[in-house]
Image 1 (cartoon, rainbow, N blue to C red):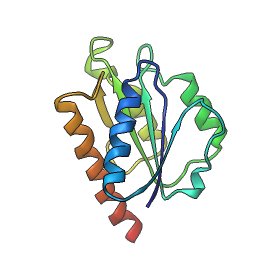
Image 2 (cartoon, rainbow, N blue to C red; image 1 turned 60 degrees about the vertical axis):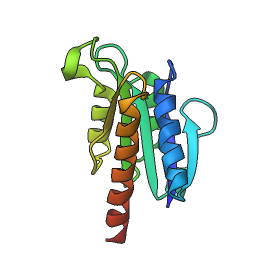
Image 3 (cartoon, rainbow, N blue to C red; image 1 turned 45 degrees about the vertical axis):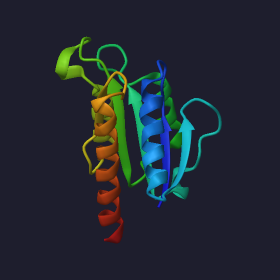
Length: 146
């Protein structure tokens, strides 16, 4: 599969998640391209089987403007999108935790639950990223066979 990973990161947490996902996908012999949102020309999602979008949650559950601009610039909803995000429960509690990822998954009608990571994906959360990536891969393989 050709997989496009797009992410926005200010503190580096979402970047770390994207890197862990990339590492796992490469280990599984997938063709992966990583793009940091806002860093230049946007890759054409139609050239990929799968697109993954990663975002931190801003303010009180908001999706960052740079991510909204990215979505607008793409101009359409690719059919196979999976979402991951980072957040912090100390700002807004569980209700707003990784709310940007939840909203993006709903917007793209993602067929797999978004990955939500508390701040950095280190420690036990690293395994959560790997497990989610494995689940998405299995899900994709079954979905693309149909």
